[in-house]
Image (tube, rainbow over all chains, first blue to last red; front, side, top):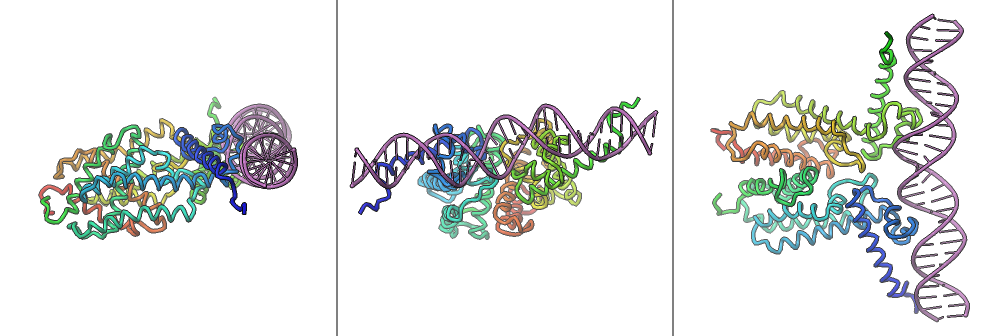
Amino acid sequence: MKNQPTSPRRQRNREATIQNILSTARTIMREEGVAALSMQELARRMDMRAPSLYNYFSGKAEIYDTLFRLGFTRYDEHIKGLMKASTSWHDELRINIEGYMSFALENPELYQLCFEHPVPGFIPSQESLQMSFGILNRSYQRAEGFKKELDTKLTCQQIVDTIIAISHGLTAMHISNEPHLPVGQGRFGSLIPVVLSILEKTMPIKGENK
Amino acid sequence: MKNQPTSPRRQRNREATIQNILSTARTIMREEGVAALSMQELARRMDMRAPSLYNYFSGKAEIYDTLFRLGFTRYDEHIKGLMKASTSWHDELRINIEGYMSFALENPELYQLCFEHPVPGFIPSQESLQMSFGILNRSYQRAEGFKKELDTKLTCQQIVDTIIAISHGLTAMHISNEPHLPVGQGRFGSLIPVVLSILEKTMPIKGENK
DNA sequence: TCATTTGTCTAATAGTATTAGTTTTTGCTA
DNA sequence: TAGCAAAAACTAATACTATTAGACAAATGA
């Protein structure tokens, strides 16, 4: 009869508090570094004592894990949004590389949590890892669709893995050298057109002049 | 008269202890992660109490900083050693990429300390940073020597930065996916010949057939 | 209004880095 | 070989960290 665990109102309040905690945690991670998140500082900014946070999360690991999943969700949306404007394999290529870097610049704390290894003890849960694989795998499926049009001997996986490695390499170097500069600028940001032109020459679209 | 601060013997003992601490620290970092180094665990393995370590290093930061410098010294030696067998720009290219990855696989704790950002509060000292820049800059000087032979519109810095980004990208992905596999194997390791062939086609040696 | 749930609190445990001050050990010298 | 000074170890303490247990208060529904 009254087996609903909590009233809708309580649930709303609780959900609001959880979102507040996550948002405050991201602020701390952005300001002081991803690994510098501390339960005490988090509680301080929430006007709480640290143990109260354990009513909402089982510990710091669960906060990281939740933000890990949020990061991949946001990354997925980020790339999806940019891909809407894509009309060709060249667009696809450019958006993958630029999108990876722009995501990193716009969400540095989520980028680091998802794509670097900034937190000593933190290993994403099995569930979160599978979710991240699912999102990354869609890159492969997208590439499959273009494979026939491309004049290359490389396999689909080789193509996508190369793009991932280059995106990550450029982004990591850009972030550690000139994190204040926007996509496309700076020593490494400005290399995006360079590597795009290299990749386009290496795997040209069939029938197109080089 | 006897203004030599310490006797040679004492100095030798002291130096031996310091080397022992550094070596033990590297073991811990390899076993439990770079950021998991703790003064207590380090002291435990040295059969000491933690405060005694402060007779040799001003703190954990100085241990990290010393190992940061050691890492770059070793990286320099590693690349130099491989370069001895180099007879061409193609060799140079291959050695840079393979050497970066093999260094990471052979010295994972030094690689992470020098080329990733695994320790929350750690920022290398000005002195150590300049030393690392000095070592990396020699890559540019080496490339200058080959520039005239290459058929490309890219500047020297663009060439070297592209190689750095690709080396780092492939290595980072290799390490986080298949750290047990040797250079040249696995999803990302096996991409080295792929990217080499791409780079060689993009900036061919003048007069050579593609 | 009363009881139950929910949330926050305080207190405590066990870990971390680091400093101050004391004691022990070491190695040289007379 | 005995003594002395310096080097290197120690203990104790401070101020952090995450986390758990258990008490207390406040909000909610009957």
